[in-house]
Length: 84
Image 1 (cartoon, one colour):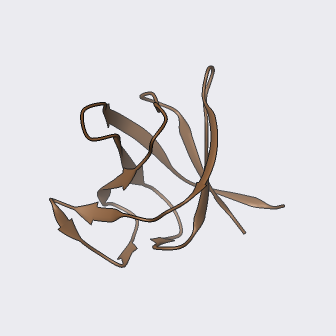
Image 2: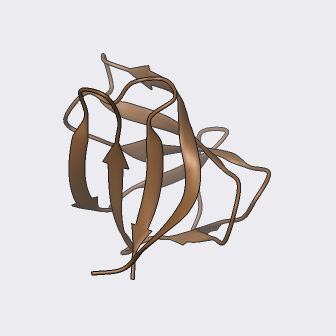
């Protein structure tokens, strides 16, 4: 499957299992499948929760830092790809 680089993980909050992702290209919507890839990270999952400043949103655009529910640990600087 093809993948598009859409952003980078800027933080991970273990107590709520949420990755903070800075969107740098394209857009991210609820239901999209993402692939988080780093030196020790390789996760693929559908986006089931998308938040901007603690408010649920349907879509994120470049320039936003959004929270995505991520049950496994993601690390700062991991790349985020949208599976298309």
